[in-house]
Length: 220
Ligand SMILES: [Mg+2]
Image (cartoon, rainbow, N blue to C red; front, side, top):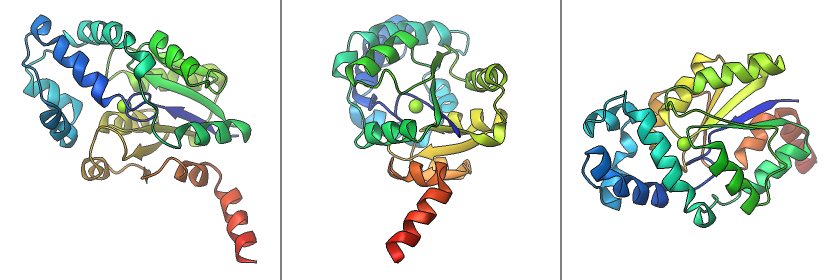
């Protein structure tokens, strides 16, 4: 059995458009300027620390912003799309007996509502959330400690550089996905253990023996 922890936004849910709408809705309240979709997409080459610096948002304000953001975001959860092939991949991993969880900056309430809409409620053993965008390693370590998992059996799957950093800090394998927020180039520069271009590739990483046997069978 392996332990596969997932980021939520940009990894499972395609949050880009709703995130942009909410970001712009809160611009006045938090004193930053609004962004067009084009500008927003250009941010893919920046880390979240760089984006906060550019928007002149103090790190002390961030937890308040995150909480306001999550509350607003919750109103659109029914319209939040899932990335193609994610559902099938998650169901297959679950069926193979792996332990799955979500570690996110989005709220547990929003994530659970989304999972219910997508009929994925039973797939995850745990959903944990923190309003501190750079606090994910603490959550990962807590999961490891509570369940007595060995770091070498654990993977963290995410779409941002801060996800790779969180995996490193908790000594678990970092799997970066290229269908989310940060660009392939930026993710590669942070040297994750794996860089995925499609959700199905995850099955080969988690079950190397299985896919090798499949390959042999195919070959025969
Ligand atoms: Mg993400």
